[in-house]
Length: 146
Image (cartoon, rainbow, N blue to C red):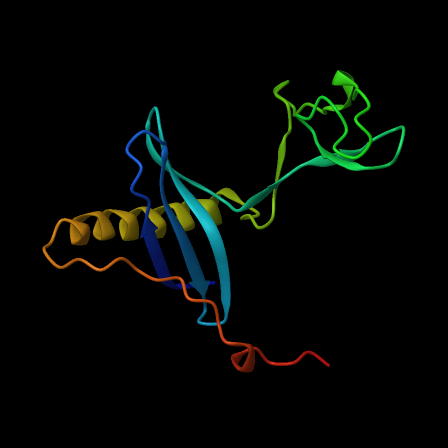
């Protein structure tokens, strides 16, 4: 697998740890969007796209995020015991949508994205800088699946 393109969109919020969103294209054929670049205590790191985990209310079956204390549908109090923990004992509140299978792939993505992020930061300091656009494909560009 070759990472053929990395697009970085800088986030202009100085108080937040989220510094950019990016998308990567692999082999000019497959795109992963919504990869985050986050400023951590040991520098920047890449967070793969994820979704909030949810479960269903025991009373009405309504869907709720795991941090919810009351059901969005019926208002019933939700059990605090319903949140699973990972192998380190931390609450598992998000699930990756896409992620590398091994450390080698993760390192390759981390390096390419970090380099593109640093390049975009440098470009952003130049006069007349125009941020990268993440335009969605037009409906007629998406092939129909039969």
